Amino acid sequence: MISRKDMLLEKAKSRTITQAESDELRGILEQEARNAKAVGDIIGFLLTMGVILFLVALAKELFGE
Image 1 (cartoon, rainbow, N blue to C red):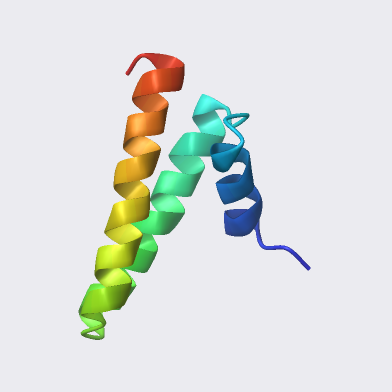
Image 2 (cartoon, rainbow, N blue to C red; image 1 turned 90 degrees about the vertical axis):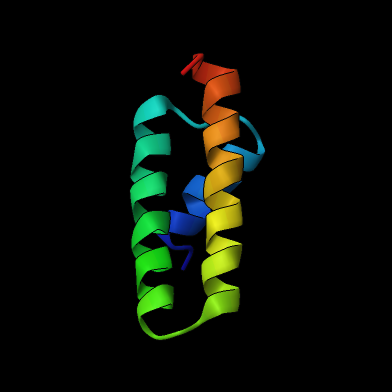
């Protein structure tokens, strides 16, 4: 079964994500980044932050934020 995060990431990749979905995905990713940082998973933290940066850039492109 596909997770909500994976579904939203696919929508982001295909540029069909809505602003509300983008906000939801950013929240999920921010929580994952906090979790990774808390357990000392620097690589996981950096990868998650990279996806967040992609999402922010995409939101600016799609929604003019």
